[in-house]
Length: 111
Image (cartoon, rainbow, N blue to C red; front, top):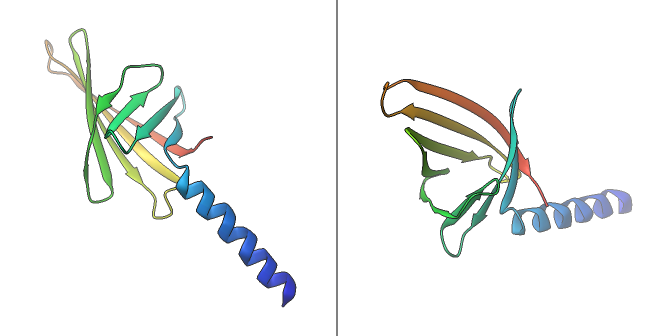
């Protein structure tokens, strides 16, 4: 019983500290890997080594957009219930050809 209580206490401390620091995620798929960092105070996000972009939230989802040359990128990030992981869906829309591509990433909390 003493061991069970100790294990539960340690698990609670680890999960609580991870949730408190869950502002940076490492996202990857079969080809790419990059980090995203949320600044909840300023409602901005930094993707990789990029500049901060504003994001908005609805329910368990965070949304933001970036643009590069003739391509618009739309990001949708869904946190898991414990906020230790998430999934990122990126839509790439080419403004000239109107071609859309979708990219899916699995993300986990990173320190």
